[in-house]
Amino acid sequence: MIDWMGFVVVLLAALTGTVIVVGLYSLGLKLLVRAGRVPVVSPATFTDAITVFTEAEIKSAAKKAAKAVRKNPLSPMQKRIALVAAYTCFALCGAAVLFGIYLIVPALHG
Image (cartoon, rainbow, N blue to C red):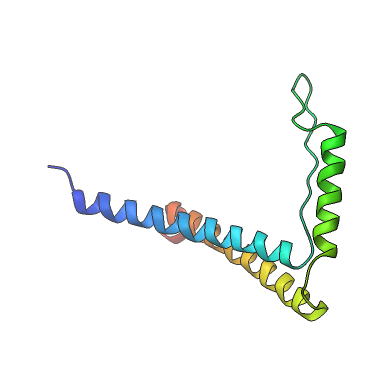
C-alpha cells in the first residue's frame, strides 16, 4: 500500500521551499531595482554558440537602465534602505537553500 501521507508532506515541503526561495529572490531583485542598481548583464559568449543579444541591444538595455535610475523618485535614504533590504532578501534566499541542503543530506544532521 502506498503511503499517501508521506507523499503529501514531501509535496507540501517542496512547494513551500520553492515559494520561499523564488519569492525572496524576486523581492530582492525588485528592491535592488528600486535602490537604483539595475542589474544589466551582458550575455556570455561561447564557442560555436548563437549570441542572443547584439551589441546594439546591449547598449539599448544599458541606456534604459540608466534612464530608470535617473527617474527613481526615492530619496537617497530610501534607496539605501531598499538596497539593504535587497541584500537581506538575497541572504535569506541563500540561507533557505543551505537549509534545504542540510535537510536533504543525512550526513549533516545524523
